[in-house]
Image (cartoon, rainbow, N blue to C red; front, side):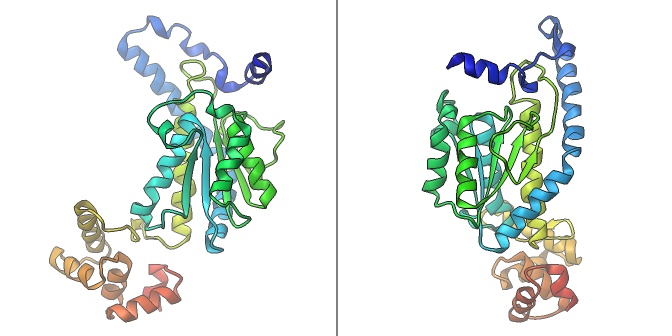
Length: 303
């Protein structure tokens, strides 16, 4: 069994040695940081090459959301944690219900804070964890794995395909021989890590950038952003209340007191407050306009 895994990983880009860092262990602190920084600069360029595939993935996700589907991130280790992180940040930022975007990590919640080696090797567990969440053909599953071979992730993708869900892979190695065919493959090729095999570094950075794009672009396409302002955030903390007021001020030009007053009248809903101010209408009319505009503020104020 071990030789089989050895053969799977020996040719992976993410497992190779980086010739630029062969002697990193002899460098000064500043020299080490410069080497890491030089490698990190390559990440955005690698992600840029994948933008057409990322755009296809976003369109799949938006279509799923419009048809009451959900987005699932599935990963192990760092990849799983990044998926959970991105999913967790969407409700406060974009006002999405918690069930809409879910992060699933091999080994469950405890592995978020403490690594549990071996759980990524369970092919069937990926499928079982999706079954627990009642995966359906309306949903989209994003499998995240730097190596492209993580059994847990492949098991989840296979299960998703069987039920008819759309599938997206975010791997950091070429995928021509991947046995499980996905609807969209996103594969930024970053070269070897600064420390061979430490995919929490460049691979993790690339994955974080891509997941940010998937959800942020999807939320923009769903009308949760006006201009470049988040207008569907949930005002559940003092900071978010004050941020909401500032957003209203920036978008409309009103002063602090007026922004506060309109936010209260709109029952804490920034979108509603914006339409009330920009279209000079009451709350009921603003809510009606937003509904007719599909939640897009720009459309609501142009009616």
